[in-house]
Length: 302
Ligand code: SF4
Ligand code: SF4
Ligand code: SF4
Image (cartoon, rainbow, N blue to C red; front, side):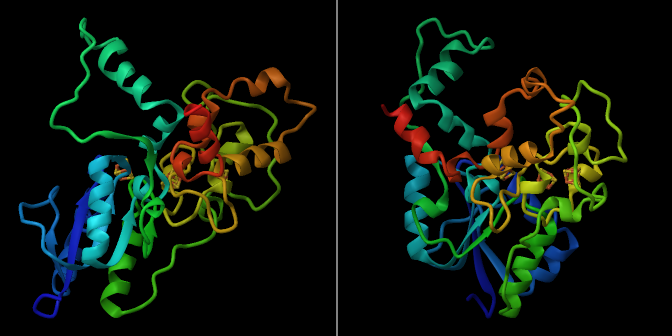
């Protein structure tokens, strides 16, 4: 506490800074929070030295480097409450898809083989920068996490509710229903999929469930809390809130959902081949926290 206020640090790991922007997006509510919470360290937002202890440490981003690992362990000792904010910190997020390859291949692809790169000597960055760890990890892999708020970026309302709970001493819980439960296109009737369609190529009916139309919408296997914001904006759910309570592996459950709603009279195996980049689409945000993470790790490491 600092002058009766909760002290807060917002610590970036391997992040795009979108999660920090969600906090800044609270706009006028930030002034209300400022009466109770003192942001004492947040390198992406302001310039200050790291304090020796804080009440709450919020982490954004995935654990991609040895420096990320060190930061998480150090801050766990310095804070009372540790929070993983955003899909990267809670589930692995987009950076977690890199776990489908090795660090060596990843660096070659980015610094040597990428079509926009000219690097005839094949030099890779190696001095004065944090070393990449073999696999992207999530905070829970390293330390005890007190609260997780997923989303890419996390929904503003959930972030606000979290701060309210910390101020009032109340409980903070994630919603445990699915995006379909919040979706304006959900009729409540059993879904039937008669075609497989590709987003961006095939025409969309804005008034009909996207999954029933044949688009890959991860709403049935994704935690609610975002108010189905992508569907309301005209896009399918890509699963950024991760699986809801009761689902351990978002991708495996989505395959099961598709299996249970496809009309076998109308859909051929060739139609299923239209679903491109299946692992990237189904594990877009969750690969490092998925059931298969260990298997992939063992396979890549021989
Ligand atoms: S969760 Fe999304 S917004 Fe947050 S750091 Fe990761 S990529 Fe950026
Ligand atoms: S599958 Fe997608 S479009 Fe259909 S009800 Fe669920 S969230 Fe809405
Ligand atoms: S609709 Fe899906 S992808 Fe979009 S914000 Fe919600 S959970 Fe994330």
